[in-house]
Image (cartoon, rainbow, N blue to C red; front, side, top):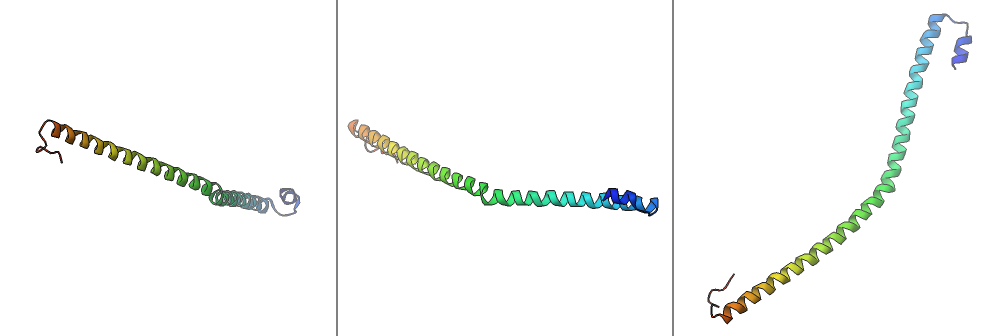
Amino acid sequence: LFAHLRNTSRSLLWKADMYQELCSLARQEYKAQIKRKQMIEYNQWKETVRKERLEKLYDVRETFQLRVDVARRKHESFVEERELRVERELKRRGLHQYRIT
């Protein structure tokens, strides 16, 4: 386009205005092209990579929840066992009326 612009028989002012207009249009089109490309990449990421990562996070969350549940049950078991040992020791010493609650 710029070669054709140089070779036209129009005035230099017209050529300068057209040059600026063409440069402005080229910048706008370049920015729009980049934005379209970014939107395509974002949509692809959203549909594939994001979905895969969310699935992994859900799996990790389930695994973590299972581990927390196991640890909680183990802790409750230890607490019960400790309370039973204390109760037995109190009975052995004849202090069972001082029951821990």
